[in-house]
Amino acid sequence: MTTTAETETALPPVVLGSLSPSRAADFKNCPLLYRFRCIDRLPEKPSSAAARGTMVHSVLEGLFDLPAAERTLAAAETLLPAAWQQLRESEPAVDELFAGDADGAQLAEWLDSARGLLGNYFALEDPTRIEPESRELHVEVLVDGVRLRGIVDRLDVSPAGDLRVVDYKTGASPREAFEGKALFQMKFYALVLWRTRGVVPRVLRLMYLSDTDTLSYQPDADELARFERTLLAIWSAIGRATLTGDFRPSPGRLCDWCDHRSLCPAWGGTPPPYPQNPVITDPRDVDIAGTDAVAP
Picture 1 (tube, helix red, strand yellow):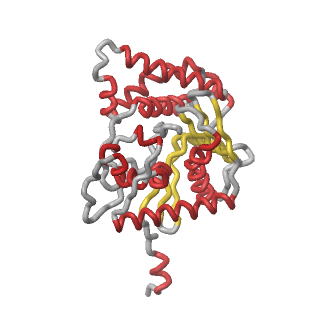
Picture 2 (cartoon, helix red, strand yellow):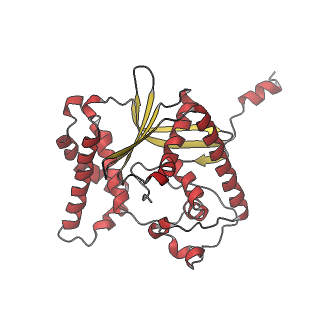
Picture 3 (tube, one colour):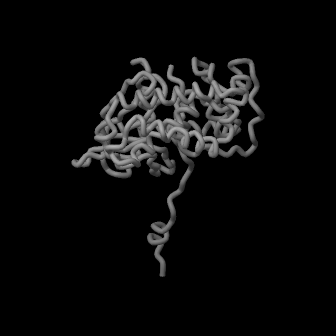
């Protein structure tokens, strides 16, 4: 005979929804953008900067498949053509970026800029001295019914068990006033790793390949606990907005890069009709490696 306690123990956990760093940041920065992406699921044009970032991330991931002594800039550059082809196969829309490039000059310049970013990476660290535990690591944890999930570019673990979370950014480093926004994603990863491994990462490191700069941060458990409450508050706000349809715009400098500006009331536009039975679905589910927001 099955007791009530045994039945309750056997029940699967209730999952209210999923939240990734990108989607949490979307809602925090502009609730209407979150709606456009996760409820209306409006298409967005491919970006040459984002596509280049994805390609460079792929090369840096593949670089660590090589024996340590072979991790050279020349070797990284030889990985670029395959990474570009892989990107074209996984995201055919990127071909639109060079549709009018009859002589291939624009594509060649773009690939050269990717080589420049790889060169900048080698100026920041020596990959022959690093053996990552994981690359493109999917991480997730269920907290109060919310599945927090994302992809960590690289996780380094020292012999003593210390964790270093590394994220590559192909844009420029943020000004000091905006460092908090830049670290939002990294604190998200640190929280999930802490909850799943029981270890607070010792270092969170953002590597900015455009201007060969780094941003390192050391979190602590109290800070991550507060950050967890912040994420749950964001999810609660998403739930309220979903029920009411009240996703308000938050105009700012990033509006200049928004594909949906023409539909935004802050710029004289009209959003599409709000669905009667809205369903939150992240079209990417988790962060796409290499997709970097434009730094303020």
